[in-house]
Length: 230
Image 1 (cartoon, helix red, strand yellow):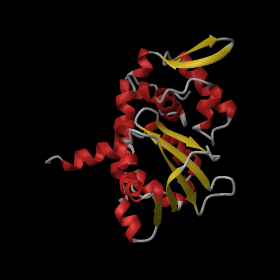
Image 2: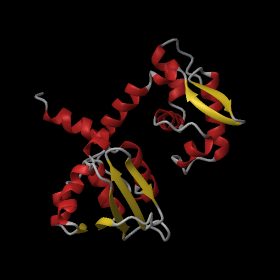
Image 3: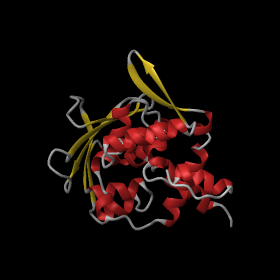
């Protein structure tokens, strides 16, 4: 851990939080992941050895505690770590507001579907489960087809193999398009008008899908802020 040699609390906090990957590890823990492999799944470009090192650093700093449950290590945030939640939410909202240009290497179908699973709002979803089959035209082989099972009671269940339920909506698009919709940079109507996205299936379900998925909570925070008088 690099030291700034300053008593300033911003500098001392940055010694811990400004290390590469640290805030993303905390993000995964805030989203409820407590197993090593589950945390790693949300950070596919982080090596397992570096993840283990960051978790040890966070334990030493008093932000994470490691427990053995049925012989398996679990990682959970301490009260000090949990206090970082509003900070990360504000950083995310700031990123949506000011970091507009996404790079091609940032479009990842696996991470997008994981994000939709974890952050979509069940209250917006149908009472009875509805299945959406997605086809990403530009995704790598093996990551092109996904299924979303949406319900108010279960939220968004993401499958990379056919779950066998009747499909209500077929959605065909590119990873970049759905990412921009999810992050609030493009509307469903604009994507449909420009033929960047195609929906077919039950007409009522097709009309309801934008309401069922809505946008990322980060984008929702920014959308609410923009609507306020300044």
